Length: 195
Image (cartoon, one colour):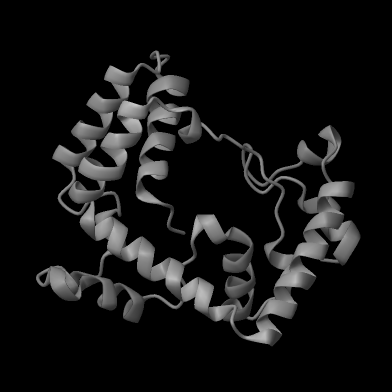
């Protein structure tokens, strides 16, 4: 699953630096973290294990090679659409890819203008591969839903999600998770839609 690279980087900053290390989320700290991540990453934010070894020598063809290698690449900004596509590729019912969001942080809109400018210009330039891959994945997900049958599946999936949000958001349902705060609510999903 890919995410817009600057949003992914800021999310990593808030999780690793602020939440886990207890640092203050200052402008200077954010810029230092982002610059350090740029300096350290030879393949940008996409982990090297994701990139096929046979393609690493030719960066001009790397995006195409990634799509040739993987059957599915979703996009966080089109999460519901990505889940419908995942269910289709995995040949599982839509009920197998239901979720209840456990974390909702919209911090990027509250960031200082100076940081927004950095992210829109310098950061984009330093993460060219990440942006090319994310933009290509986004275009593929969006174009997949020009198909009316797939759009109907998305409508069905969103109806199921509405039911899940209405009936599976209790503290009791959210306490039953596969691991930590991942995969919570599955017992309620099973009650609603069967195993």
